[in-house]
Figure (cartoon, rainbow, N blue to C red):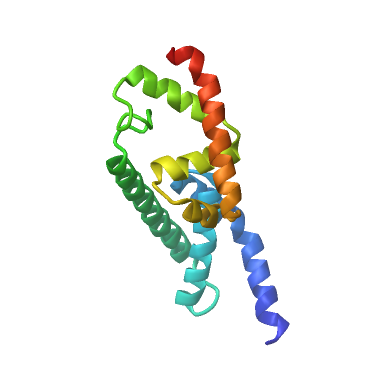
Length: 163
């Protein structure tokens, strides 16, 4: 492959990338999404155009890709809300007293991340220690130890409140 098409691509991209990115940012919900949409749109436009694409094709592809991304995000959000309708309190299904559920949720959130992950996967994910270990990439014994440690810390932090 000669350097000619690459330099043509580099020049074309340098001339147009700023305006494409600006449009992509206006069409998406965040900068990371904008960059992903732009990259996908450039590749698709280049392939569809059989070489250097027309600007109108790139803009149309950015818009379509952004709409598709927004729809996927909305569908995922809807599915997550249906799976756990009241995400403000994780424990409503297990604890009948809403105030206790809120206290328990706050106590879990104060745990170190590695303990919080294990307790969440074990209790609310309904995973075995082997599955928790595989999910987190840790030994099974470590998963069990972190679970016990998390329970002890929860008992300690909640005992004055629940007595």
